[in-house]
Length: 385
Image (cartoon, rainbow, N blue to C red; front, side, top):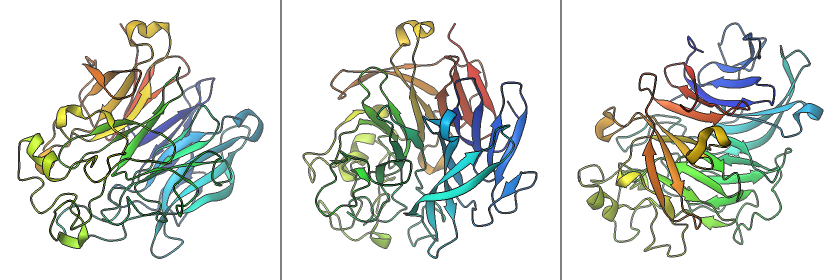
């Protein structure tokens, strides 16, 4: 499918019906017949069956993740993650919608999470506009709960905060209440499953072990894939005066004072590690760090089925290809063979039959093929040779 705007996410029904979001337009559905119905538009969007004037697009924020309820055949619920101006400061919300019988409209909007951190305006440091580091992926896990990834919003206090739900992975039920077994530390919001994240834009689940993993953007180095454990700390803490740092603009050392000055990834990691094991020795250790590089890791999914042969059970991750100073590098898909203990991985790079692009979302469809959404507005369907 082509001719759309930035495709942020996709979610499938068993018959191949595909819901998808365009970050600055809204939610649509593609039926197995090929018909596309525009369901819920954002402020000023045209051609949608309905619009929500509080939903808006800015920077990395907009209408991001989409997920289908595991009991869709009974309740017809879908969920989207979107920035909203219903409050000031603005917040990201998880919104539950009911899809009608012929997939032409949604109704019964219920905002089940209303307080996810959103970057309101540019900071004094030289990186990131409003809406930056916004997280935004939604996935139902094998346990039937909804997992929500949130970003640190360029705020040094957020990732390790017990109460601000940015820089976190939330695990909630379909009404937005905390799932049992989150094991959040004492004093933490009970919806928090893991914390200390930077900007996780991917979450996926191993098809055999059911282990959840995040795919996360790194700070000029070390995009990371990490096996999550309930109550775990991902080890990102960009505050000033931590681990020997001095003052940084806006108390955010995620890039400064010279994070991007050292071209050697090992030098950069030594200054500001993505997972700070010195400060947090019990932090969750990554399985893979993209060879110490940051290239805009986005989404992930596990390949399943015999058609994938040796890749059955391996993780595929997409890259948007952002390098130092915004240079376009690394636009690709990688396949990871992750060790059983979740602490190491071997990589293979996919030979692509289509042009390289900013690969924003990777989702395996019910037909077993891999669907790839791009910032250029295309959705590609990939089958193994």
